[in-house]
Length: 302
Figure 1 (cartoon, rainbow, N blue to C red):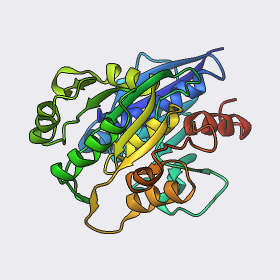
Figure 2: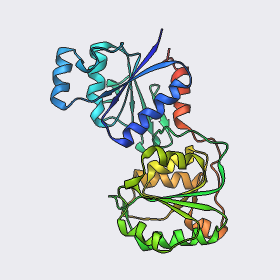
Figure 3: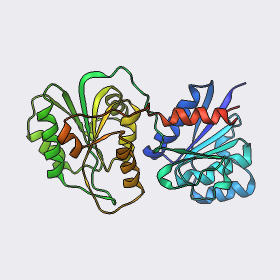
């Protein structure tokens, strides 16, 4: 009998990355059928909850588990369970009481007390697989941009990249920007005309291509505002460095990054500038795989 997963999605890339990562890890442990279901709006959710219905699933097999990431998936998950059964697994700290869900997978920077139905993770889950066979002498630089927590300084970023690239002339470097990256940052890198550097412009690069670069690159530098990319890079098995970006304030994200630095899972630019070495994480960093194994142990996947 097939094990059915309903993945409720709000369509946001970061949230999809988390839920797909967990689904992939579960599918590696046992045969599954996965159904991706878009989240309804608030009014539809209220009606569905009262009437004990879930119209989007009328032609689907009933779920064994229902997975969702993002606040917009929380009510649809409850509607789905009320209408068709199954165990709910919410990713990240929910906006609704934890008792509404059967299980929660929450990053430790969200400061949730340990409970039997909670798994605490180091960062958000992602679908990246650990790669033991990285391409030698390949480097990737991932650029974020201004955010509510960090002040972006293109000149400071450019100076760090210049130091890294000119010191590691034997490495083929690729630089990839993101939707948040100011256009002048990438333009200034292009104008430096480094001999062996490739540019991946976000407007011309799909997410699948970028994931392949993360998976294969031996060394990865990430601007410290790009938390999800930091965890994906660590999950890939690369030696990871942090390009420094000024913080506006102390917050749970900066605390999570500080913990990674203190645990020596990655290297700051300041440390690299003294040692010229990037360290590898001290353990295999695959939180989705670990969470799937714990769910299996706790009987959620039976």
